[in-house]
Image (cartoon, one colour):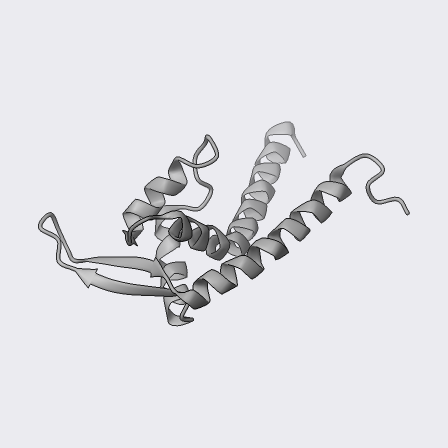
Length: 129
């Protein structure tokens, strides 16, 4: 196998890994953005806030947000309303529900525990007993 094929394989594996991480984190991230908002937000606004987070490009693409937003709303964690737009199609605005705030609190604790575990495993000697 030549170097360019190995690099392509590594790129493909890295993209797959990032996609799997994104799938697991999208709900947590979206709830966090909406929890911090002082107003209801529509999808594009959420995507722009994500873009400005962490000092780089958001690994979660705008098109991937909408199915997750719909699922969170269907689960009762978000409420939504449709508002006519003068500049295009109507916009669906989202806001947190009390159930969404409860879920976010629980998920934050799970995330912090998971993050600490992974960080510990990645430290030299982190997996020795």
